Image 1: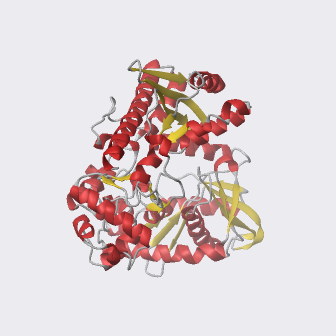
Image 2 (image 1 turned 45 degrees about the horizontal axis):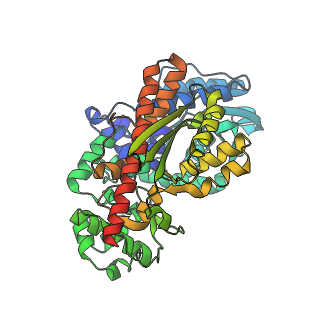
Image 3 (image 1 turned 90 degrees about the vertical axis):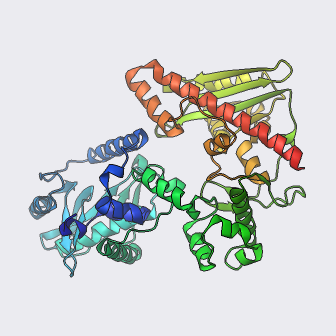
Length: 504
C-alpha cells in the first residue's frame, strides 16, 4: 500500500471508521483475498440507495462534474469549475483539501446547492446535502455532513450556514454544525492516527453492525479462535473495557468470578445476568435463569449483543400444552411496507398432525387477501395459542388490522393468544449460544433449515427478484424458509417446556 493511499481520508472511509475502526483499517491494509463478495441484501440496499438518490436529484435540474472514477484531483477541479460558474445544483461533486500535516481529506457530497452569500466565488455560497436511505438522522450521518461542511468551508472560504440530510421518503433534517463539527474533528483525528500508525485495531464482533460487512467471516474466524469476549451475549464494547479493568479477559475467568466483583463495574442486574451467561457458556449447558422460580423476574432481554432491562412477566400459560397450537412467522419486504407471507404451522396433538399454511401474496396488492385468509384460519381454532418468535409478528398484526379496517371483535381477542417464544427463552433460561436469535437457538438444539444459506434478509431479495422475473422457484425457497422458521419455533417451544418442567 502506497503512502498516498494511507494518507487519504474520504467520507466513505470515515463512515466505515465510525461504524468499525477495524473495518476502516482493513479497507486500506487488509488482504483483499479475505474479503467476501457482497451479500445479495447489501447489493439490494445499494440499489435502493441509488434509486433513492436519483429520485431526489430529479426534483430539480442539476449538473454533475465529469471526471474519471475516484480521480479525486480531477473531480475537485471539475467541481470547482462548476462552483465558479455559479451552478445552481451540483450532484456528486468532489471537495478536496489537506491538513497541515499534508493528509488529504476528500468529500463527495450528494448535492451542493447554491445560496445567497459571500464566498470566494462571488455573491453566492454552497450548502451541502447528504442523501441517505435511513429512516432517522443517525449520528454517523451528521458526522459525515459535518466533514463535508468543513472541507467545503476551506474550498469556498466561508462556512455554509448549515448542512442538510435527506432521508427515506425525502424527509429533510438540518444538521447543527456547532454541535457536530467538534465531534467530527475528534473522530477524524483518531481515524488519521489509527491509519498512520498502521496498528491493526482489535476485533470486536457486533452482531448488528458486522452482519453485512464483507470482512465479517475473516474477523469472526479470528474472534472464534481467540474465544473473544465479544462473542459472549451481554458484552458490549463498554462492558468489555470494564471487564478488562478487572482482569477478566476470558469466558472462564468471568464464570469463576463472583457477582460482587462484577458489581464493582456493572449494575447488579447486568452483573448477575453476565455471570450466568458466562457459566452457561463455559460449562456448555442450559441454566434455569436466576430468580425465575420465585417469579421475581427482572430479567434482561438478550438481543444478540447486549442485555437490557425487561418489564415483561413470564407467561405461565406458555408452559401449558394445548390440544391445538399455531406457530406463526412472517416474511416482509420493508422497502414496500409489505408483509407478503403469513406462515402458520397448525399442530393438532390429538390427531398427531402438523400442517403448514403458507399464505402468500404473489403481488403486493394481494396483502389484504392473505390477511383475510389468516383471520379465517386462526379463528378456526379460537382457543389455540399462537406462538411466534420476537415482537415483529405482534406489531405486524396491529398494522394489518389498522390498514384493512379489521373489526375489533376479530383482532382484540386475537392479541392475548399470542405467545412470544423469544421472550420466554430470555426470561427463563440462559444458554451457551453466541446470540439469542432463532437460528442460533434452534441450531443449538440440533434443528437445521433445509436451505442452510438462506436468511430472512435474503428472502427480501428473493421476493424482489420474483416480482421482477416471475420465477416461481424463488417463491418456493421463501416458502420453505418460512416453514422452517415456524418449525424451529415449535422445536424451541417444546424444548423450553420440557426444560422448565425438569428445572422446576
